[in-house]
Image (cartoon, rainbow over all chains, first blue to last red; front, side, top):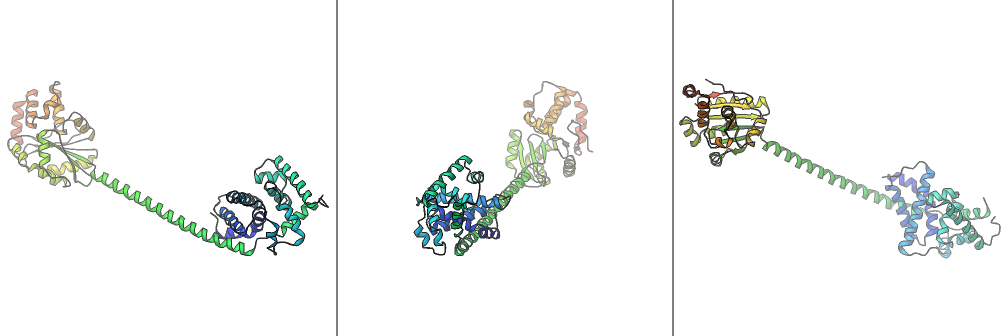
Length: 160
Length: 257
């Protein structure tokens, strides 16, 4: 079991990552709070010995994605967060990015994690396949399709 | 980085975990960690109590077993035949009989938890035994155990308690012989006599000895060995005191005085 100091450090280091994943997957604040507690509680009680920070981060990402999917399954929540709800939190977004975020949030669930991991975290397809425990070819396919969907939504201007 | 990469990265870069969310998570986890540790402490305490209780039970069981396990057996034969089990603390923990007379005598005695010295005294002072001894019957007392030193000490004590009483013979023997005696339904004193008799008359059976007195057995041995006359003279001599012998079960008898 990890100490309170260790978990506090992890919260400081990975809270933004967990928050972004929650935003992509979940609709409301209560669920986000639940996910934060679930993910970091798992971190506290986990006996996994991390080789380095990258390993630790990948573990937390996987746990967060799984926790979000569990919440969605359990409560039959909407798969997307509406932009209006995001806009109700003015400190979160600058107006320039609303269109892009809306496009990302409107993607079907199966594309969201690969889009986040590839476009934001910068993971390659083989790395994503290890984190999500998916076939690498499946990841390539999901990335290609999600890119097409995003281009369609964003008009394709200056995206290459 | 492509335009799409940049746009998505920049858009998501705007998202941060609010300080309130982080603080709330930290507080909730702090509480959960404390609860977990309290629970863990309680569980460990309960486990420790259970282990200690088991140890206590084992200890009590072990001590009980140790207390009630005879370390030495004192076989008293005159017909009745009795075997008295003596524990490591020199206390009587069992009284066994090997014939009807013995059962009757055992039922009339209340010698459990007495010291072996008190028990022997009590047995020798019963009316039945004193009458038999007065009628010139022979009493043998055998001390049997695996601890030779302990057997020697008990034998020596018994010899001193019975000093001055006629027709009493004392021996010590090893435990394995007793098991053989019990297998054929005899007490150790009679088993010794049976071995002696068997060497003179191979047809003799243990059942025949079960209801005979030690005097009758001794007389039979003497008659078979053709030394009856001599032995009678010897018995007259024993009447003046008691016979004491010690061996490892070979049947030797040594006259004490």
